[in-house]
Every structure is written in C-alpha cells, then in structure tokens.
Image (cartoon, rainbow, N blue to C red; front, side):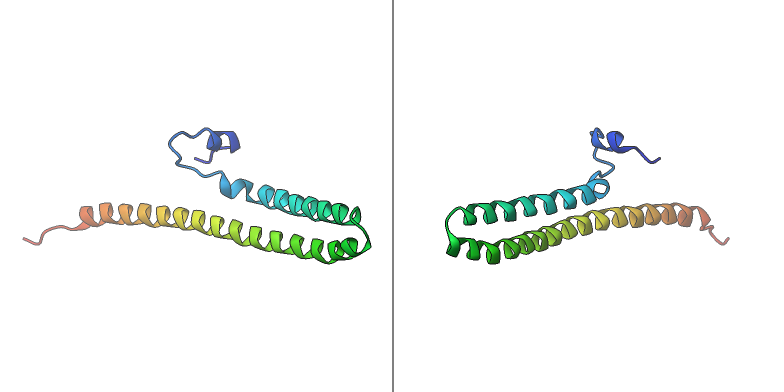
Length: 110
C-alpha cells in the first residue's frame, strides 16, 4: 500500500521514507542557496572597491560550483543509502517468501 506524502511524513514506525520523494526539492533549494551565497559574495566584494570586485567576480562562481558539487554528492550518497535500504527490504521479503514456500514444498519420501 503506497502512502501519500503526509502519510509517510507522520509514519511513526518509519516504514516508509520521504527522502526519496523530496530529494529533488532539496537539490533545488541547495542550488538557490548556493546562488544566493554567490550573490552575497559579489555584492559584498563590489562594495569594497575595484580589486575586491574583481576578486569577487572570480570567487563567486567558484564558490557556487563547489557548493553545488558537494551538495549534489552528499544528496547522491543519501539517496544511495535509501535505495540500498529499500532493495535490502525487497530481498529480505523475497527470501522470507521463498523460505515459507520452500518449507511447505518439501515432502518426506517414505
């Protein structure tokens, strides 16, 4: 039975995950925050003079890319961990089902 977002959010037994549902939203927020950080660097550098503005023009894109790259890698690690958990559960359920059918199919030869 597939639960909706709020069903997963308030699942007190933690049987279903919401992270896989909201990972795209988290990535968009990360990009927006990295962009705002780069903008703050540009604005603060521009108020300090010409040399600082030039430094800010070089630093802001680098900071943006580093934040997005590290954020993306972190989110990919998180999603891989959740996929491992989901696939492990599928394998455990399949093994449990096979052991039940295996014990019922074995008949002694007498």
